[in-house]
Image 1 (cartoon, rainbow, N blue to C red):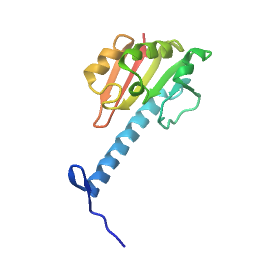
Image 2 (spheres, rainbow, N blue to C red):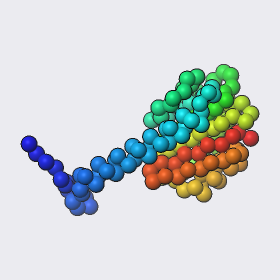
Image 3 (spheres, rainbow, N blue to C red):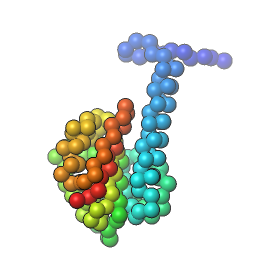
Length: 154
């Protein structure tokens, strides 16, 4: 039986225990984000943009579509959710993406976005600059690994 306590990396010896603790902390942080999203979106009809990774939600009434299909979606929804999508877009394409998503949402709908820090946007100021013009009751949360934003559509 082998016991691994450390491994070599480009930066030198790395403790496996420290790495596992870091991984567990990220999973715990994401679980908190998922729980907050579920509470925020509960009871609403939700249009979820399919990103490379999607959160688990405790909600029914979710329609999931690829970002490219947003303009083809019929009807309007009480909430919009896009996770790990902004990091996939160039900065100049983000406003167009928001316009397309908001076009499928009812007036006053709740919008929720989340991504990893440094992907899409990472600082609270950047997130405020992107979302303040389109939403009210703006709530920006920036954690150690993830950020998430929720607001009501103007």
